[in-house]
Length: 345
Image (cartoon, rainbow, N blue to C red; front, top):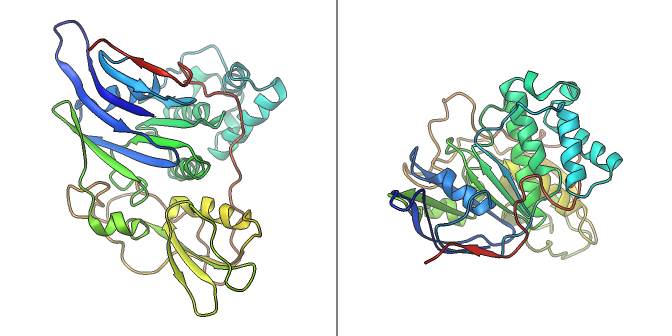
């Protein structure tokens, strides 16, 4: 998807919230947007999701899109399961398939026990789990997340990290805003900052850009090729830092959120690779210089970061990689099919 000269203001004489935005959102990419409160991040995300239309400029090539807003309206006449099943049907899933997909995502986010609870009676955290699940039901090609981790417990935040990694590994684009600079640290393919209504590339520390798996929590997978001299599959999730051992095996280090997606890619390769071990490397976390994209704050801060997902002690068998998200025809926040839109110049 491509934004060309996109601007948005409310009212003929209103101030510009964003202006002159040129942005490429390629497939199989994780893109972060940063900026101060009120800088226009949410406006930009709504434009990308198709929830809002630009005053000037053009947006071209929007694929099937899902959107998790900063605030989810819970006062709807559904139970959690009923709401997700309804949306699944709206987007092309037959009744039983829609109910199964809804159940899968409620289970993954630890909300299965609230399947029969009315949305209006859910806690803020559980409501946010439903909001995230509705965006993932139909495996969108563009997933837009506006502070989607806010309000989730640690386990659900980790599950959303994994879901993001799965979408990117499956070829989708994920565009996100999050107040925590440790969110998916080192995994972003691009980072942009909004200031004074303008979007500019954010500086990325060269070490983190060149070796993304060294920023933030990470996991190392020790894998054995199917035969002598076997080559690794192309475009592995998380852009792993790879070291080939003298015996022909490979050690691949990725951001922790991408460990499940990497395992799945190796295990489903043709022919498949054998996984020897999965481990979280010992040692202190790398820190990005202050002000850079995904800068890592002090390790002593409470939670909010990404846990070492999918890691098991060296020598233990890895847990099964998470499978793909349920397929569907469209996502609950799709507002327009792929195409071009824009305002007057």
